[in-house]
Image 1 (spheres, one colour):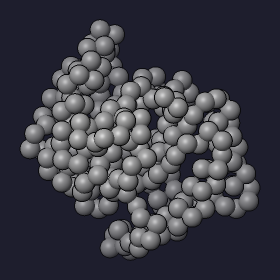
Image 2 (cartoon, rainbow, N blue to C red; image 1 turned 135 degrees about the horizontal axis):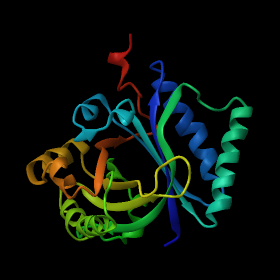
Image 3 (cartoon, rainbow, N blue to C red; image 1 turned 135 degrees about the vertical axis):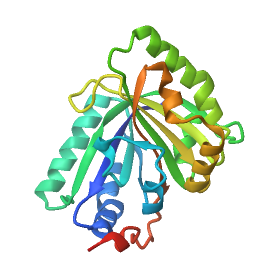
Length: 249
């Protein structure tokens, strides 16, 4: 497995400057990052107003976010992360960073395991490189007082039961599971699961609601506390970036 970690950013755009943000990221920031050694791949998705209304769960700490970005990183991770942060500082100094944004959750997460739906011919490690129409993301923390035995049992349940069930839902091509790396940004064992969708994200939500228990049921083991569960759309380079125009003053 070439990819060792993913760098996530759950972002809120300020002052209704969505067009500027999207054009900056697609045409300036993302290309500059992808030229770095060890930056294997990157993409950003948007939770349009209709998808914001259909989130399965969201904690107040992530409620304002409208976008999620994911970069995939290879070894040597310490050097790759140093170069990644250094490029950000350089672009700031050059006046090429978009400041009207706020990241409510960000940082590196180690890849734990990859999965592919049985209908998809490519290997699970190749899932992110297929064209996609969106992403379903869950974020969870370890519940207060959770015993290690309960965590082990919950991990097995996700690995052997829940994730395979979701791979059979409409449009799910595959899933990558991540856990936070030891930094100050995220608590230990914070877990993100990203499910790549090759069908309409709204159709996935319909299928989820018809076939999957509520998040309360999923959390019944008391091993995890869910912070986020929702879908995002992929962003074409020639989009009008006008999803939030109606909410502007």
